Image (cartoon, rainbow, N blue to C red):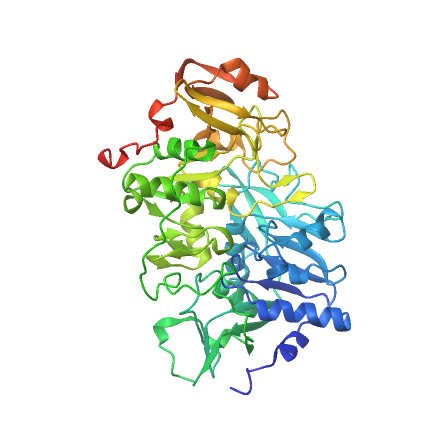
Length: 517
């Protein structure tokens, strides 16, 4: 293995100034921490490599300096093309301050673009992103004032509008596996996510670039089960073994063998259900579910939905498909997001997005951030707080039903009295505003797609109808003018048959959904 086994310093020394570097990973799962921290160390010591273009599909970090935040240094990067920036505050600050060119494209688009690059296609043609800030008629995904060239364009194919995300050569791919043999074959038996390692490695190889792989351990050549090899050695140029602490399964703590599917373990019980605002929302969402559907739950709502599904005894009746490639199981939250306890399958991220982008999800449960009168939603940028679109655009534009969830005002506090819901305090920032800073979800595109869209808050439910936000339900105890209209920047359409939300949502007992499934 002498030809491919390298020290971290030797591997980093291969990366030239000005290279386009793709990095695989999802949160901490599959992220090559030893390699990215090695790049940082060399840059701080030698001011090399410089002026890199960084490409990544899913956000990779813990919010505290790990992951792609290792690369968040002025001069190290010239351009960033990525999905999600909420886990990498130092990198996000570079962008917000205009010290690097930056674009945010949907996670699934970038994952699938790797395959287009590998097969020498001019780019990826997709409907994902139309009429959002990714659309060049808005901002083309640009995040900073220094971002100049167009990387996406509107094209017409077979009488329909599409977006063409242009291919670009990948000079260096940074990937990760669990075991490498002497030929460079990689297996992933301890990994919580397969991610996009294979498609990224193929893209780099066919671009004339190099593939650097980080692993936990080494094996003799030919000793690995071919059925378990996720990246063949013909694609791999260099292998480094990660030092202790630089190969965490996720950024969420100790390794969990159930995340990788090695064993099935008891799932920790969700915390007891307390009927506060978020749980009222999650219970209302649960009324939209039915047995056998396939759903995706955004990271902000995993814990709340998990509690409700467990309390109702219906968790096993609903299929889960996470954007990381995980199918089934119980999704993990927080720093372990993207993993799941006891998954049924771990797919390549690009393959999962074939399914997601093609309309495979029956229901998506996502955050609503800010909403305007036309049902558009912003979850990607709030002033200097940069998040990026992540997989939100993929999921929200392709699911058959989209349920967008959030508090009516930021940090609203409620109480339950005999007469119904009482608002104890409203936050200063409103959810329903006249103008959005960015359009991450397009109401117009949802209408064109034939999607059903609900906006669920603790005190009111809205639906997208004929291109307008329409109020359809009020919680018991809520006054339309005092508690709803007074806290909106605009007046929504109001259903002539305005209903009260089911009073059972406010009662401290299960809704009895198992009997309906």
